Image (tube, one colour):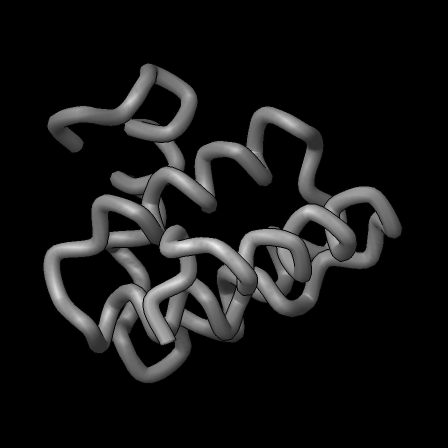
Length: 85
């Protein structure tokens, strides 16, 4: 995917192969055990999402992170323009 680093591009390509009806669940499962690099890639996918539907599904999946630092980061981002509410 254009504009994404290599690791995010690979993740984006894999996620594009997933049926849209289960995309948020697939991202949720990915986010649950996400490394820092995978979490960053998911955030970049959210930021660069081509539609509100995709950004909503990525954000929904991101809420599944289990790492307290990543939860805090996501909560902090809700108070910034990064999260499109």
